[in-house]
Length: 244
Length: 324
Image (tube, rainbow over all chains, first blue to last red):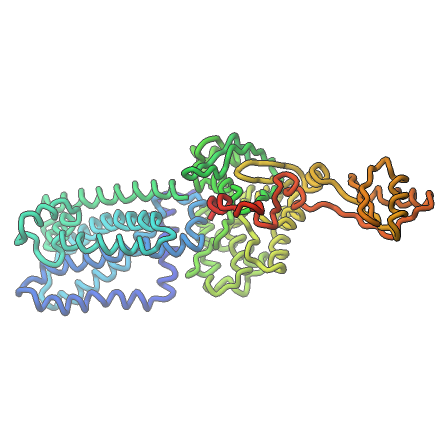
């Protein structure tokens, strides 16, 4: 018999298979943030690697999981998404499996980034990093599910998907203090950042990578990630039911 | 196998499906026939749990399509209008993951995929990217995907649309073969008259979201249209005197020809010819015209299916709106 986990694995491995058969694109995309890091870090004050690296990891996961719906758009047009909707696959498994396909390669990338940065003085706590990635994955499942929902809503009008995705992703990123610290910003910006769930996830990543594990930042990050995942899965399942 | 009561679907102001009562018994092969936008696909999409009905109920394979979606999905196969296999995937991979979706273990899914690849003639192409397959090959792969879990009930939405006549014939053969071997209940939609006529022993004619006729092709034709016998003579006077011989059949004369509407024309025509000869008024030529399902549709709706279901004076805009 199937379970939510086996269903998720079915969807995940189906999605990942074409990528593994043609790994060039994924290798290429994994190198990109290293270039970003190499060109951006010299602009930052000394000793900011410790602050900056967790942010870069969050950023690549964020970009990747927000693309979950883009592969789906094509499969909605060709009919294979409809075919999957008629199978007994559990609806959340369709969402989680597709999001994980974007997230898992990014975790390989995170390991690569960390490996490259350690010789330059980056220090991290392994338990903290693993916990941090679990929280990040939870958040990204939610974001991936929202991206999936957006693709369902913008079938037959692909531009809508890209417009909304591009419009939302940068404010989300900047208002979370991923690239620059929010603390030095004006009050209104800090207020907006407080309403952004990603802010809490980024904070949690930084403290966890630093080895401070049982902190309120971890808890807030976990809550923000779980809330995003719940919202994403709820919206996605609902959109699948209503899609016609 | 299928039971619906007042099944209805509205899209905004359009009544795509307007109160369908349907009963399909195990083992039947049923064709839903109608013009584009008649509501065939929408009906199928409700029966396969893809969209919820606006009102009415449907039980498919013993379960409610709204409250017991998973139970329904486990028991049906669905081959939609598009391609079930992802274009960036390989056919065999898709078959195996489809099997996994229905709970087959990996070795079982692999074995089942191999059997279907073989029986649908896909051995050459199963390990190539789906996007490189021809239309006919993709369609056969779709059929294989729909059959991976050997469902008792199979839905096919416009299975042969877009295929050339040879591929279409090939596909129909596969479907009939499947039914002969596994007694699968099959419900398909089509707007090809010949397809409904040659494959289904039960044709349900749908127009404007309603069932307007439901019977075997032969009985639909006999009941709604009937056969015609056309007799030709050398001179109008011959035709006129032959008409008086056949008075009981109330023939209609058009110049040198007599038109007779009747049932079972091929059987009756020999008697008519004997009769005319016995009266010294032999016919010079004879033609037996059997009705098509299009004639049935024309009689029922005043419109021809061949014209895309649109009445000549209205452009059929409402017909086109509903299903895309």
